[in-house]
Image (cartoon, rainbow, N blue to C red; front, side):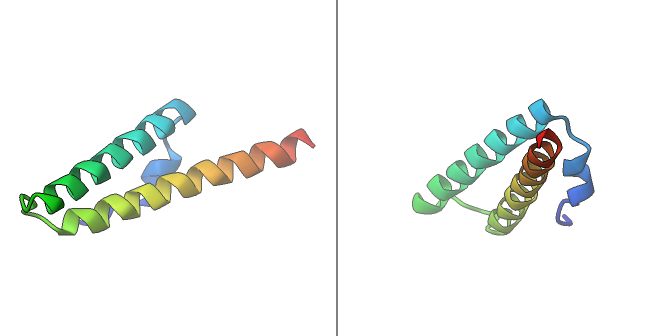
Length: 72
């Protein structure tokens, strides 16, 4: 499974972006829980989830900075 592309994150609306961020954070929590209970079968999912979260937070930050500069 390849890593997700940032272009996919940039195509999301603000509401979808916030929902996706929340979903990835929940997924990371579940992965940590599985790791702690030794039920984790696919450890590469950590990398994919953290990568996706970083992309989503980057896009969110870009949009906030863009909105801040436009309002000034």
